[in-house]
Image 1 (cartoon, rainbow, N blue to C red):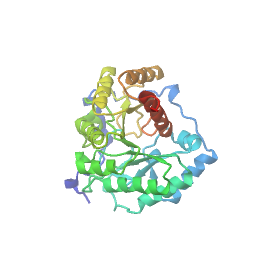
Image 2 (cartoon, one colour; image 1 turned 90 degrees about the vertical axis):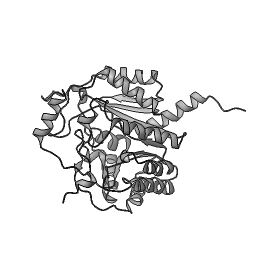
Image 3 (cartoon, rainbow, N blue to C red; image 1 turned 180 degrees about the vertical axis):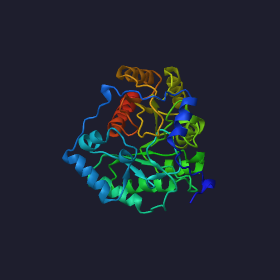
Image 4 (spheres, rainbow, N blue to C red; image 1 turned 60 degrees about the vertical axis):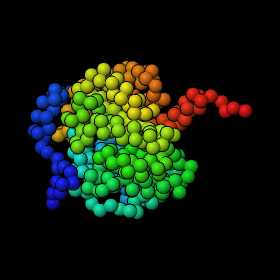
Length: 326
């Protein structure tokens, strides 16, 4: 049953998306994937163990739902996963994403406890938690995100926590609820440059995303605020630099930059593949603009090397502050 008053969107057909892409000047033809994007499969015991822990607690991961190319590396080599809470059905239809769209089910209030148990089972030192958009809920799902942070903190106090949330439609109280739960990193993705946002993102606003990040910084001056950008959708380098400037002005200190990869036949096609050396240049520009950490590469995603990012960020903060007095 449709509930359009809640802003829940249904996927449209491939033809509609191709027409929209062409209108925005994004290449509709197939662009051959370069050699540097080939992924090595990993079926090590760690890969199996992570999958078992996720299934045992009946959880979802963005690694699987969004068809992340790094799943074999993260599960098999780093023994990490990005847990996706609030179900596996999203109320928005972003044109870069493979997560299902529709009317979500009831909220599972015990899910935060299961996430904490999965983190304990896997022995994680750092956990990355993301969510589907839940525009059908008054608080956008903020209470469940906050409950998940608290549950992990109680069960595994030594584990650092990173949350990647929706924009909560700009509701300040929802953002406050998440920030006050005190995750180590609060993240929200701007995803793309201003010009391409209407094409790429559903029911989202470039400025609303920046405002989310500003509010998070305002509510907790000590919070680590993070965002991510995809390239390969038709943006120019100068637009990426402008987005970096906007993120820094909003108080963002960690930025991830990765190559957009078309996850389904009906998703927006790739306009071009940025070369590894171009990603290296983006990382250098980010550092010059004042970001304390930039993870930039063809296969980089929001949660890519998240634990290592957190450790590097803390090291850089200590270096900036200098040795303690006394």
